[in-house]
Length: 274
Image 1 (tube, rainbow, N blue to C red):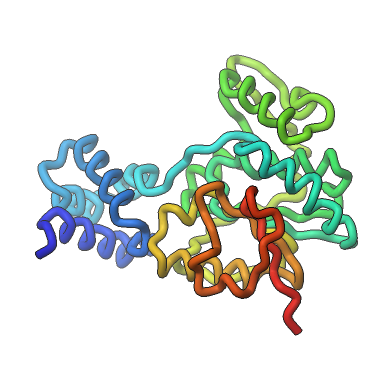
Image 2: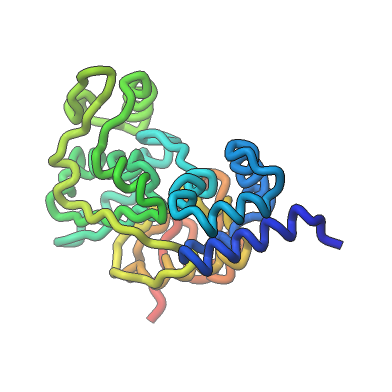
């Protein structure tokens, strides 16, 4: 028999979907439960049902609870060997196209987007590339579009950039002032920031690479399959898909549509099926 708390959580997720059209019903239950219980305690509710009452009747509550349901942990050039593999193995293929489209799915506050923008500028691909940076969290997208990060994070960002095979200094791309680093506006000139849900929305463009890292680990199997099917539908022939270090296509319903390209770095290539 399901625990009352688990029933309450399912009802809350259904209420959020019906009222606000955010669909977290296919997210991994253990992760969602942990975060919603944190939200319950933060908002001083006795039960998850009490939290649901607030969400349904206080228009400001959805924005307040959204950060608990969307994970916003990232850094520039996170897992540097992934970006090194993109630089050394994927970029030579991308050079053969006169124009490029890259989708950063689940871009959160923009660290991965700026990593790609800097990498593509260093490799001479930036001016011919359109980047699509998408997320379901409006506040995170605003932060991504601003491109301002705490200065105390820059040391880690700089080391990651170096380990990724970065050319020159990361400091070439930001201005430091008042305890913050503001990244060059020019890095955003070819970027479309957009609200997009992997749970409910459709493919919106043909792309040459999709990078969706550390997002699928929060989905259940059915939603993982939906997202990967979206990526498959978005990618051009022989396009590339990059996932997080703990994610894999191995058990996906769409696994046969891809081949391993850089196995250790979780980069896959869409098969050339005619």
